[in-house]
Image (cartoon, rainbow over the protein chains, first blue to last red):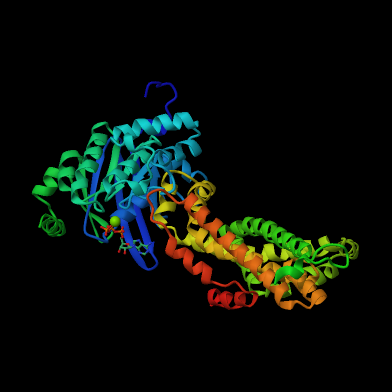
Length: 256
Length: 264
Ligand SMILES: Nc1ncnc2c1ncn2[C@@H]1O[C@H](COP(=O)(O)OP(=O)(O)OP(=O)(O)O)[C@@H](O)[C@H]1O
Ligand SMILES: [Mg+2]
């Protein structure tokens, strides 16, 4: 922040996301049951837990891709409700990276990165292009800018997806298992990008089972099971001495 | 064998001129009808996939009505029935439209709106075939409904359905022959007229058949070119998808059958 004159209230608040008593159901099935989570600015949170525990559902609720059934979600000072007029305003502040990349296959790499800044943020084409090229350079893929997604490897595609999200200059980045669809030799290039992003102070919530990454960047590991947060701790404590039996069982499984 | 086509007719023309004039009407009907069909079809097809229940229901209603009434019946509805149900003055002025146009416009509307219903279903299928992640990624970037359709969904869905649109292009120009029933002197009508004037049935309809085949080939080749031109670099060609399009014969009667499959 260079200009401190008229900082909106939300910008001075130390938290960026508040989740309170969140409930999410799919039909009769309760996917999230009374979840509470607060994300501070610049905080890096790693979410882990067994398959089906509700990790994806939780982060998808944070940008309202899934609508919640109970509780409150406040993102950057704005409460998410079904009737809110400006959900896209909130979403444009929240970057999201998916397990399956979800690049737009009919647009070139650089166009993937330019579309939302132009259409949502109102940047001119040259501005959007310049920003896109900067961020593609940052994820070290600018030499492929005019290729199409299908012409890139999985690791390259995921780095483009990260750049695309960053082009909106989001206040927080959500990652849903960004490396689990990748071949092992490509995992590192994506994790390196995420480590770099973390080092620059980006607020991040990552669903991942990459324990090395969690140890290196996470301020907090949040462990979920059956739709609830079961345990939260700093990574060192969590991996060395998990308190709950369920977390112990889970850690045993992913290490072996 | 086609020598007779170059003989003089009673009105000083040659029979081949009759055929060419018929070909002109056929092409005009197919060409302008196609653009009506494409424009309406895309809009209605999108309408079938939107969240708004009312819009989706209206789009569905459109498709079921226009796709399930045989083209021949629709032709009669536009030509004979429409002027009767409109207010008298308007109906009368429609009946006053001079000959070729008086049947051309009803035929154009009929074929355009009928084919639109079929295209709408293709568009809907194309949209529904896209991975859910595309919409999610667009939403996550803050693109709203309109921008997502405009820049993400529709461009991809249209590329996906180029092969199946091939059969619609061929369908619309084959269906132009139905317009002879309301008096438009298109290719088939001219062939019949020549056959009646010369008693050379085989020559007259043989020539028409060859022209229809040539048109089919041109339509097919152009759609292949379009498919290639819009193909996304790096994606695999959808060649296997375009072959069945040739086999899929679009007959007025077949529409009812296909409609029932989707209704169930
Ligand atoms: N759209 C949906 N409809 C019905 N049930 C769903 C839907 N999405 C998720 N679920 C269910 O909600 C539960 C939580 O799913 P979620 O995807 O959040 O789990 P997860 O922790 O991300 O698991 P994974 O590690 O396998 O990705 C699962 O039991 C899942 O079957
Ligand atoms: Mg998941």
